[in-house]
Image (tube, rainbow, N blue to C red; front, side):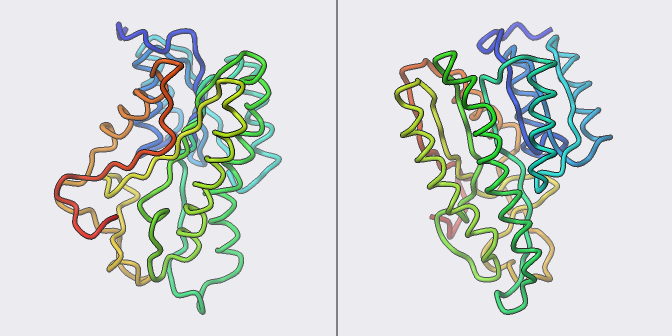
Length: 251
């Protein structure tokens, strides 16, 4: 059992928890003592993540959810509240993409990217907000991208969702301040995950994700998210950009 108790007694809900940054974040939060609920589409991978979290001595639950389905999100949150109690930390780490030129982009693909990358974050914040407000505090971390600060060719849906996530987070921070609810938007650069890390030159719609040399390990970004969640209540980080030291061409 991990002796780190910074978040003991708290419950964290993490999307995209079956792999990559989502899973790394779930395990980092569990390592800090939080009970964790992980949401993603891959049921088998979720069970692996939950097993790893439970091995750290915390309660953990898995919820196979298509984050483009609003009703499924509501059901999953209800299950989390019933199994683990009110949510203290929400991390929206799930993401999807539909690369390609605007002229060729299918409307259904555009809608799915906005649903998963933006609307799901709104729905989850809305679902956990009353509990955070009633208890006088909570932390929401929305994982954006450096593509949320500068638009790339062949990435219109992804960039639009990530830019909009900044506005959503700023609104949450403003509304949450009287209730000591913190909201932070995180802009990671290239990360070493199976999802890959696209550079502007890669966004042709046909290239494979490219992970630059020295890309950030997901575990390091997860540790940063855990630090944000465990920071003293009076310390508020609204925006954080994190990139590898040798990353070139990023804002």
